[in-house]
Amino acid sequence: MKKYIYLDNAATTALDAEVLSAMLPYLTEHYGNPSSSYALGREAKAAIEANRKSVALALGVSPLNIYFTSGGTESNNTAIACAVNELGCKHIITSSIEHHAVLNTVKRYCERSAIDCTILTPSTQGFLNLQELEDKLIEKNREGIKCLVSLMHANNEIGVLLDIEKVGNLCEKYDAIFHSDCVQTIGHLEMDLKKYKLHFASASGHKFHGPKGTGILYASERVKLSPLIIGGGQERQSRAGTENVAGIVGFGKALELSMRNHPEESTYIRSLNELMRNALSQSIPDVSFNSPIDGLYTVLSVNFPNAMPGSLLLAHLDRAGICASGGSACSSGSDGGSHVINALGLSSSGSTVRFSFSKLTSATDVDEAVRALSAIFQSTVPVA
Ligand code: PLP
Image: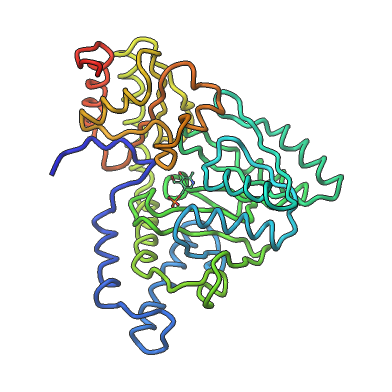
């Protein structure tokens, strides 16, 4: 098998071997439908409920607040649909650097229904002006218009972090519904969802060594979740469809492992991030960084000098067996580059590459990637 240097862990992570072992019996022995009343079905149902409990414990909430979904995209869509269709939100406040699973969903509601939206633009470092958010909340509150605030906890392309507690307090003060896309932070940061005064939070299993196609939506007891996917009565009437039992077991195991090992793993990953930042600064003239020093430790977004287009740089890296991305994996192939880098006004100043790390990344991976990049910029590798 070809050996890759995998530096794209914000796009997805490798499944942990222990997670796979936990999942396998639910694909083979315990294959019952959790809605079946006989023992084989009850075994599957019991596994779902045990994992709901462990996920809730890791996030500081009640199992009644946890709904299993197919991933971050579905969770984001469900939260936004519920806020608009059931909770009376007529105005959505979001930002121009949200993942498309939020941004395109909000835009669609605004185009097709009587919903208005405000799209906040962050500074070039990616920070939102929370005074601007408060001013908008005051204005809408005075007009008697209920708001949904949907802001991501950590940006997946540059790793900038939201002051989620402060936003939670503002939403409470002005009676707004608060949803946060926590896909890049749940499994990577210690989270106490109650403290943030959230109504909804989304997470995705494949970002922390769990299986793809798994996720959760946290919904506070202050809201009644309504289904986006309609059918049977699974997930307490809130998400129809036969449950992905092995996936749920995998999500639960992956979160348990990542929280148990969080202190050591986060310190290790942070050291790799710093190693790459320092090594690139020393070996490539005029390199700069879009990720704040105190941002999410898994992500390093780098701005390379204007020497070559981003797509060519990524092609050189690919040829060297290095996996990294220009923006989010979900937007690769779309025209016009990353909407995040464009929104930050950084698109004209060079080419941007996001490197992202996990517990499976080694210092050698980082060294080899930096060496390959230096070679590319010294043109020892011919530019095609
Ligand atoms: N939100 C963010 C911030 C993400 O990074 C991603 C995945 O790239 C998603 C949502 C979508 O999650 P999923 O792939 O589980 O649908």
